[in-house]
Each structure stands twice: as C-alpha cells, then as structure tokens.
Amino acid sequence: MAYHKENLKERLVEIAWEICVEGSWQAVDMRSVAKKAEVSTTAFYRHFKNKGDLKAELMLKGFQLMSDVQKNANVGDNFSKFGAHTIKFGLEYPHIYDLMFETKDIDMSLYPDLEAILNSSFNGIITGVRAFVPTATEKEIMIKAVNIWASVHGLIGILRRSRLQTGKTKELEWIENNLEEYLKMTTFR
Image (tube, rainbow, N blue to C red; front, side):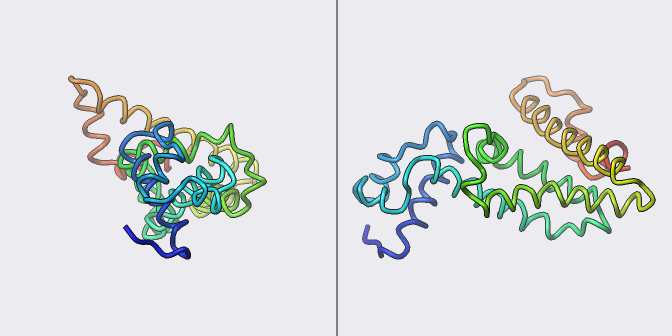
C-alpha cells in the first residue's frame, strides 16, 4: 500500500484505533502497527516519540468522537440524552472507552489538547447541572456533577458486565434499551 508522508500519521492512528477497537490497548504494539501500514518502525517513530504519544492520539480521537455525538444532545434541553450518548459510546467502543478514562499512566500535561477535551467532557456535566438547578451553589453543582459522572461510568461497567452474562436481568435489559428514561428517573433529576 502506497502512502503519502503527510498522511502517514493519520494512517498509523487509524490502524492502532482498529486494533484497539477489536482487542484492547494492550494489543496495540508499534511494530505491528508499522507492519500493517507497510512502513518501518523508524517511519513510525518519526511521528510518535513513544507509545504514550500514540495512546494520547487515540484518546483524543475517542474524546472527539464522543464529543461529536454529544453535541447532538443539547445539554440544556435534554440532559439525559447527553448522558445516554456517553453510555452508548462506552458500550459501543469498550476498549477505546477504557483507554480514554484509564489515564493513570499518561502525563496529561504533555498533551494539552487531550487534557482540554477531557476537562470539557466533565464541564458538559457541570453545564447540564446548572441548567437543571439554576439556584444551586457551586459546591452543590460540583457534588451533583461528580455524582452524575460516577453514576454514568458505573452504569457503563454494569451494562458491559451484564452483556457477558448468560442470564441478563430484565431490569438491566430495560435500562440499556431505555437509557434516557432511566437517567431521567435517577441520575439526571
């Protein structure tokens, strides 16, 4: 496969994305990415100093994709739709989602664009809480936002585990099929 030098970085990211979607971040290795792109590992390292740089690119791509989906959910008008989109993203892209929110081994200060979009994700929740509870104090808004953040991420984990079980409960099946309604009943009120 011929490639142009100017789009090799994007091609390497796309290949790593595909590997991560199908397997996990642990399945991504720079030699196999370079091999699938039909370039040398030297060419790979011209675009990424290390595996952390590639990880940051994949995380950024994941946050951009999730953000694009969330933009369709007007936070002020339908906050539960915003949450439902986040949960659907976590269910559709489980390995990318894990990569995005497992940030303990990456120095976010090295990747300001990534840090900004991660902060923007949480700030969307703060904006939604303000719209729902305009008289709340900043402390109350922050406490509710953290609770919603934890609830959404916890629900993603519960639903992902339930997909692996042979006898999924009717309640979990209903929740997964009615995310917005469930969130209106619980987290987003």
